[in-house]
Amino acid sequence: MDWSYLLKILVIIQHLVSFLGVLIILSGILLAIYQYLSQYIKGQIVSENDGLNAIRLNLGRTLILGLEFIVAADLIGTTTAPDYYTVGILAIIVVIRTVLSFTLNKELMSLSKMN
Image 1 (spheres, helix red, strand yellow):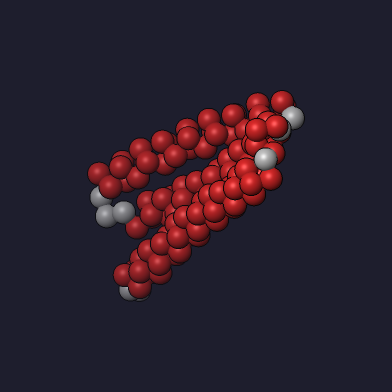
Image 2 (tube, helix red, strand yellow):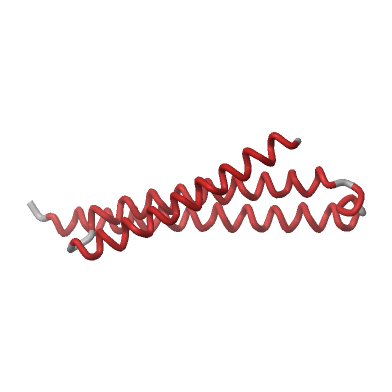
């Protein structure tokens, strides 16, 4: 059986999942900018702090979701890694992104309890 064909498919899947994660993060950033500017123009940013917290919560949730997609892509990438050095680098990246997701999630939980 020719394994190179399967490896090529896995690399394509990895890139697609990673791209989806980036798109999710980008869409969250654009939405947050739109919501902020909308509230700023209406003058609600100065008078209401709840609006800013809602924007932060939505952006944080979107960032976590995008990071989860990117971590999933990295995990798929470990199946196509040619050597232990590459697997080690991928493992370090996954750990960093997982810690980042955890801390973002913890901050979001504290923000949502305030509302």
